[in-house]
Each structure stands twice: as C-alpha cells, then as structure tokens.
Length: 626
Image (cartoon, rainbow, N blue to C red; front, side, top):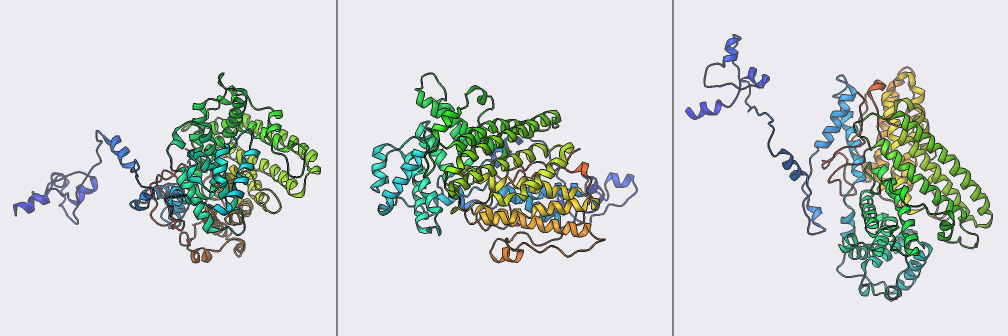
C-alpha cells in the first residue's frame, strides 16, 4: 500500500496537469484545488516533465548530429532509419502560413513532404555507394578497347590546353596497353576513366556492363586519399575532370564538395606567385577563372558560401581575349579561330563577378533586410552585362558560322541560349526576395520556364553542352517554378488570370525534366515532384474558379500521370486536394530555394517521398515576412 501511494505521488491531478504544476496524491486533494473549492480528479496518469537547460546541451547536440565514422564504403548501407522531425517542421511552417482555419487540412502534410523532397535530391549521399557498389578489387583491363580510348583521352586533354596538362608518355603507353595497375599516379587514372565513362554513356544505347566495369575502375582509382589532400597540378586536374565528366555517378552536393577542395588546392599551389614560370602562371590563372565560374554557380544553387573570395577576382588578372583565343580548340573541318568560344568564356568570367555580388546580396546577410538600392544597382549591372554580352556573342556568331558545318553552327546557337538561361536565373534569384520587384521576377520566371524547350539538345544535331552546365539545367528552373507556386498561394480569386498564366509556365518543367531523365537519372525524381506540385496548383485554381467551373486541364502526355508514377515504383504522396487558400501577400514570400538540406538523405533511387526522411534542416525554404 505504501509503495502504491509513493508511486501515485509522482502524478498530478487533472487541474494541476493542465497548469503544468505538481501536486501530491498522498492527500485527499492538493492545496490548490482546496483553495478553489474543487475536488481533485485523476482521469489519466502522466509524469510532468519540464525542459531544463543543461550545462553541456550544445555538446550533446553536436555529438548527436555528427555522422558516424565509416571504415567501409558499404557501411552506409546499414545506417539506422531516420526520423521525420524535419518534415514535421516544414508542416508546422505551412500550418502557420495558412492560419487556424485551414491548418489541419491533410494537404499541407503532403506539401511539406514535397518541399522536403527537393532538399533530399540536392544532397543525396548515395554517390559513393553507387561508385563502390560491385567494385572489384582489381582493375578491368579492357585490352581490346584500351588503345582507342587512350587516343580519345589524349585528344581531350590536348583540346583543353592550356587549362589541362597532357598525360606523360609512360602513362599513355600503359593505358593503351591495358595495364592501368602499372600507372603509379592515380590522378591520371581518375581522368582517364572519367573521360571514357562520359564517352560510353553518350553512346546509344549505352553498354551497361562496360559502364559498370568502368565505374568500378573509377572507384579504385579515386579511392586514394592523396588525391584530395596532396596539392599537385595532376590532382587538381583530376578533380576537375571528375566533376565535369562523371555526372552519372556523382551528385550536385558531392560536386560542390569536390570543387571546394579543388579551389583550396589551387590556393595552396599558388596562382600568380613570382617563382612560377610564365606558362604555369598563365595556366593557373585560367584555371582560377574557370573554377571561379563553377564555384559561384554551385554556391548560388546550394546556398553555401563560395570558396574563392570575391576579392581574389580583383587581385588576379582576367585572361585576355588573345589568351582565350589561343586556348580554344579549332572547330572540326575549319581553320577559323574559335572566336565565339573565346568571347563566350570571357563573358562567363565577367559574369562570375556579378554572381559573387548576387550571392552576397541574397545569401550573405542572413537575418537582415534586403538592401533594395544595392539590389537595384546589381540588377542594372546584370542587365547591362546581358545586353553587351549578347551584342558581342551575336556578332561573333555571325562572323564564325558561315565557315562551320551544321553541327558546329548549332552549338553556337545553343551557346547563345545558355547565356539567356543564365540571365533569367540570376535575375529571378536577385529580385525574388524583394516585394517591390515581385511583378518583375514573376514575369522573368514565366519567361524562363517557357523557354526551357530551347535548352534541350540533340547529340546528332549539336555538340553536347559544357558538362558543368548539367546541374544548372536540372536545378535552376526550380527557383522560378516554386516562386510561381508561392505566388499562386499568395494571390486570391481576383488575380485568377495571372495564376493561370503562372500555371501554364510551370507546366513546361515536367516535360523538360522528362526528356533529360534519359541521360540524368536525377531528373526522374525532380520530374515526379514537379508533377505533384502542378496537381496541387490545379486544385487551387479550380477552387478559385468557383463561379466559372471548368474541367481540369489534361495532363501533358509527355510526362507520366500519377498512375504511371505509382506503376513505375516512383509514386509520391497520395493524391490530396489542396484547400482554397487566399493568403495575404504581405505575409508570404517564397525565398530562393535553400538546398542546404539533409545530413543523411534518401539513398535508394525508388525511395518514397512519404517514407521517413532523414535529418533535414530545410526544404524549399519558406521565409515569412514579419
């Protein structure tokens, strides 16, 4: 009996429990209830626990969030399942946005999962698992194909001069003889297998068996810590070639990490030190500017700080047009200098400075209000750069195209389209956080999405674009896509026509991703998520159009329906209609997408978006203006 009374003493009566205070069951009633002339009731039991500040709370959090050390590359396959706390956090933000009346609608849970899924795709950590999966303990020789592949590899390095160094004769000899295990410097093997893997992947149809063996060889070559820790020209070149040619086995997050490592390695080697010979100084200067473009582009996509400080662009001289002309490979079948390529590279170098300014304005001042005058000044600079760049490039194209074959001429046209694509994305990213420029970014967002078809290329008709453009093609359109989606949520029925125009522009994204999915498996996940967002958008517009009920637009046949997605094992959340929301515009702002996401993410290609996501810090981040 005494034990029972002692155990009951730890529990509170209903009144005290709601007040979150303690009472004692040893007595007939607690003092508070007696003072209020109320009888104590005990409808259920429960221990009151309060969160208390602990001395080493920060250290505990760090220990809990730090990833476990993996001694085996396959150990990541046995990670414990993660919780869905991060998804719940996104759900709570959406509920606060919608208000009390609509906060419990089940559609917001679906939307939070879709937002979180965007983050999962950016920082998917399965890249090393893919590399290590089925990796053999020895190199596959490929004796029959080795000579031809070596010739293509040597040619690719020759075309990249002076950015790239040629392979030493003994390395080329061992590669041509099918003896990769005799090559002492693993950096050359990483370059070789990256270039060959890109070449084999471009064949139609690709040979999956050869690709698997090449991937195994690439893993064996890359699995050497000296590649990442020892500053050398060969290691730096190997990292860059791996990033630009091996997209099939990498993720954008891993590419960002490798580029960050390459930038640090270049600074360790030195760019313009006095003791460097002129040829080395020129090559490293051009490497710096090429890295600066990639570094700033990935920093804008990932919302992470760039590695190369923007002050370095003022200290290191930009390559002249004469230097760029001498570095451009000649066009096939023509002895005319690659004038367009030199000007295109020069304009990208100029743009990298603007990218640094845009990153600082958009991401470099967390918690502070946007500096509207600085945004307007940078916007004018961006538009001025675009006008001058298009004038120069169009003039160079008119000069060079008459001397080129059809395929080379089509490549020049595609280069002009990439400049417009870059301008649209940076313009949207720069003006998106500013309410005063909301009409501008809405218009540019619709223009960018409507012109996505121009960014598709046919390998038989035009040369493949620069490999570094792949992640921009996949992820840049998501910024205007989600910006328009947020605008539709913010607008009421009075702007139904504008919402329809926004939906029409959004519908260009899934077919675009569907066509890219044949080459880039990552596009499959993005396509499925975009389809679900469009379905929700249609349900919103149908409710906004209560006075004029129209049949929903048919799903574009170029991308799969929800039934097809479920049948293919890539189904997303269950269909759930979104309530008719009319949210005040001043309380809603969809900021640029935060790709700084999950510490550990969906690993399997067919992971369900409604499965328990792993630790997430944000997803398609919504910023709420106070």
